[in-house]
Image (tube, rainbow, N blue to C red; front, side, top):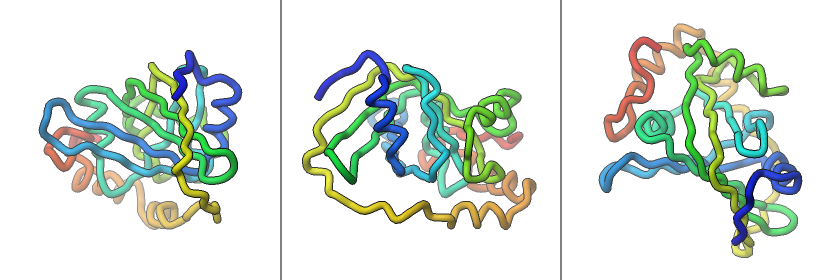
Length: 186
């Protein structure tokens, strides 16, 4: 493993080429569930500068990342090479969830040059990177990338803004451990 001072040209090129990444967060203390979420879709991850990244967080099954970031801000993002030379890159940092109801949301959303869709985005996850590392990834399997799934986009396409707000109230108000994620006003 090698620790880097920043996301340099080589690392940035690697990160931006990956169609999938993983996000890990955890609540404070020894109890509660550690969350690891796979993420993807072309145009949803952005390297903002050498120590700052962001990704689009779409409506979905849970709100663990948002709840954990509200509680303690800790987050790790991991990229794996499934094709070509083996490599794993981890970005450790402090993140925040900027929900679509926040006045800062439109400005952050506008930084993404080609998102697949913005109607289904519930927040932008903004991360101040504190540690950058890469490791070999020798045991990561070789797999072929066939393309992005469009199921989530089709799901949100069938819902109005009011439907999505209702979804957030019903399903995203708290984490599975009862931590606040979205409040009822959002």
